[in-house]
Image (cartoon, rainbow, N blue to C red):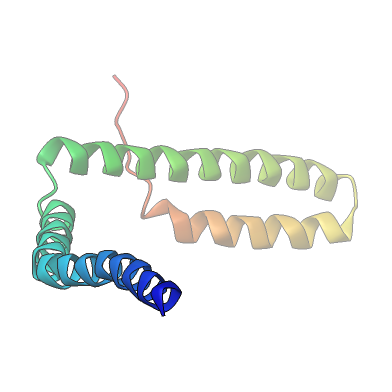
Length: 115
């Protein structure tokens, strides 16, 4: 009988920690959920409110990317034209398709007049 009583008291003591932990988790859950909502709202707010300098940097990167692509196409076009003038029919076809892609890109690459 004594063993049973000791076993039950140890079990009750061990479970009281679990119950206390569960009660603590239950009590702090609204605070944790609220904190996540605030962090989520702050993240959305940060994504919406982009500063002018960040917008300019992003635009500059995009322009440089397009200019690099256009430069690469121009080099490929010149090489294909050279091969076409030597009689390579496939190069002529490549030159036409490259020129069409360059023509489509031309409107999106800003032009800067040189003095």
